[in-house]
Image 1 (cartoon, rainbow, N blue to C red):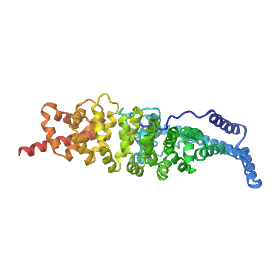
Image 2 (cartoon, helix red, strand yellow):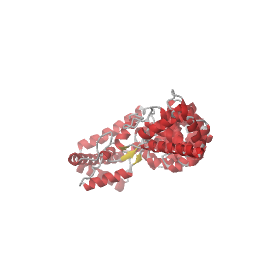
Image 3 (tube, rainbow, N blue to C red):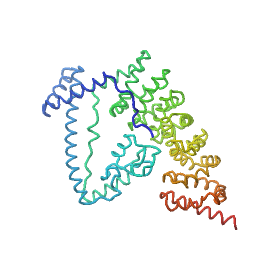
Image 4 (tube, rainbow, N blue to C red):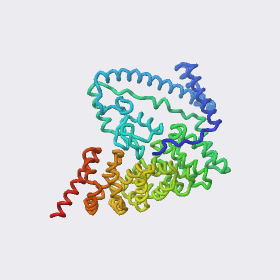
Amino acid sequence: MTRAVEMANPPSPQQQSHGDNESLGIASIEICRSNSELKRELKRLVDLITDEDDCRTEVLDEISCILAALKNRKLRFQNNKSENNSKSFSENLEAIGVPDCFLCPISSNLIRDPVVVATGQTYDRKFIQAWLDAGNRTCPKTQQILPHFVLTPNYLLGMMIQQWCEAHGLELPINTADMTNSVIITAKERKYVATLVDELSGDHYESQRREAARELRALTRKQPSYRAYIGEARIIPILIPLLLSPDLETQEHMVTTLLNLSIHEANKSLIAEEGGIPPIVEVLRSGNMAARENAAAALFSLSAVDENKAQIGACGAIPPLVELLRDGNTRGKKDAASALFNLCIYPPGNRSRGVRAGLVALLLEFTSNPEETMGDESLAILTILSSHEEGAKAIGDAGALPLLMEYIKAEGSPRNRENAVIILSALCSNDPRYLKELKNSDRGAGYKQALIDLSLTGTTRARRKASALIDWIQRYQRQITM
């Protein structure tokens, strides 16, 4: 539902030139020298620093280039070795035959890093991440719209695959592709980041601060290494106060920078610990539309950590998220829905906050409008709210029962029919009057037959819920006739 990395403006020509020169330096060192020559040169340069106290920038940069060249060679060696092992591994798999449940639905290969998407399907992380990064919003196997893009590790399946490999004398080859794509943060690049931070935090003209914020936004968009470095270098506490900048453009750049930084797992907790959530919520309330959208996306990213969910809700984020869901453009609505979905999962207090903010009425409005693009996401959020007594009461009081039955009767997506029967089941378990309403309205609407059909043809969970509802209705009929 949200962008993995925001699409910021491209880096300036100076930045691009800087990056190209750095890459050329590493490449030329690799081509022109052997490993032993590189190591001798590295020792000479280190001796210059230790013996002669020569800490010139040129010396430090050359050391960085040599270390990068040595690392690149090492990774290429590991990758070639891994590829050779992978060929042998694949040949052994073909001879043995892999259980279907161990195969990734996208690659049709043995899953190496199993993760679960919102529909409950398991994929290999590498392939499902590529699918999502390409802009797809559906589950590849079921074609259902994903209400969120959180990838949850499937540790049980991973353990089963590992045990199966060991039982057949196989060893999963190490994948070093992600390592070879990393970028070394050189001394020049660290110095450039320090210059930007100085322009952001020092006594400079607002135009300089705005430009520095734009450049930092572009840097954190480009490479994961910058996100990791900025977190490890304790720069995040310097950036957070700029979220409250009176300059709306600077504010937009900074909230987007924090969105980019939050993609790095370690930074999710760090941003919260350094007090970043309250000012992000303030941007969500009062920023320009682009800033509000990215603030919602940042809160969605941060809410992957349970402790952050509670803090985000306590800081008052849910009412402005509901407002953005109601009034935002398509992208803003998607970001708001993603954040609200995550926040309503935990803790239960966030569901109460959503109900009090008018979320139920808005979601029912979306689900009842066939022209609305947010119907599927809205039904998914309503399913979470219905698990809370206050949420179920609000849904029932809004007269949602006929709408839910229409979803169950319709030839729509299996996930929507499942969500509708889950909500209906929650209403009936909280208040028996909905059983009476189902029974009394059954004469002309064919509700009972729709539930019977769902109990035979729906998803596993939908069949179970539909069967339970049929049983409840039958018991209620027996009770009132006794």
